Image (cartoon, rainbow, N blue to C red; front, top):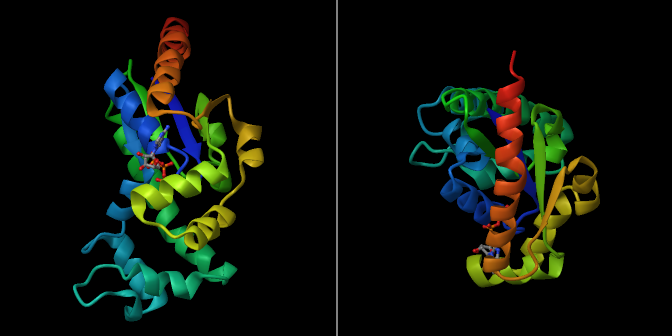
Length: 206
Ligand code: ATP
């Protein structure tokens, strides 16, 4: 099994790359989706969050009120750490469980927005970073998600920048051009690097 970590800034095109990898046959593990699952209504994760931060973080329907929680941890380093101590281990455990369920020949691509911030690079055979110029990301986020420029800029500023991502990247995929160009780059990476790497790992297994 080849474990690939996929990361990049908000709006860089991680989901587009992950979708292309899935079409090529990768097992894609989506950390954002798992992060929502581990705090879903009825989950242990949500119960711990309520025990730690109070019932004020619950919406009337019993789901997590993200803006309320966000307001509590925003700018409060200790509170943010307490929250991460609840969520991160659960996301890691569930991701590992999903990867372990894949076949031994699988190429598992884990889409992890905060891979660099959380220091997870050493847990992958290969780290792929999607890099897109901030101006283009702002335009795509406005066009496709209706996100205001100020909001998109705030989110970009809250993440690591591409220089930090480059330090841990084995492969950088530029996504400043068309989706067709991106797909061609992902296909080339898959056939020329990931498939041979996985085959090599299997040959070397003793
Ligand atoms: P997030 O961090 O918010 O999950 P992401 O990195 O997964 O974002 P995507 O959702 O893949 O980014 O891309 C952001 C938006 O830009 C999407 O609407 C996507 O369809 C669009 N997009 C991605 N790549 C291109 C491209 N090369 N040309 C045009 N649009 C693109």
